[in-house]
Length: 109
Image (cartoon, rainbow, N blue to C red):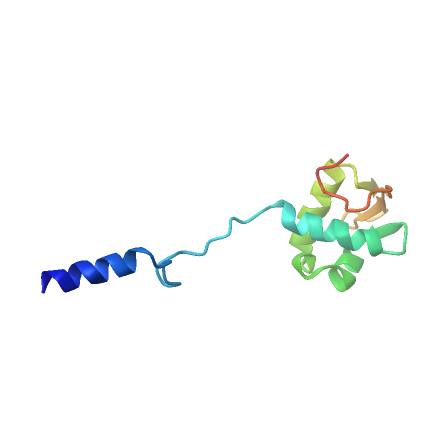
């Protein structure tokens, strides 16, 4: 009986862990929505963009106001967007900085 237990242990040792055993956790990257927004802005035909346009036409990761503002703050910090002064205090609009980069990265300046 002991030989069978040893045999099964040895056979099981070479197997990859089953999906229930291994945890599939991907770390949440704060730059991911900003990168998706930057990729979308490269295809945007206008020179400016506002929160409403990001909310309606933008990538799914930035469809709500909070995530759109967070992503645009990262892009402003890295020089991809420049804020435009608006009459309303709650209105947000940005000038898009166009650069001749094939695959732009958020952290590239």
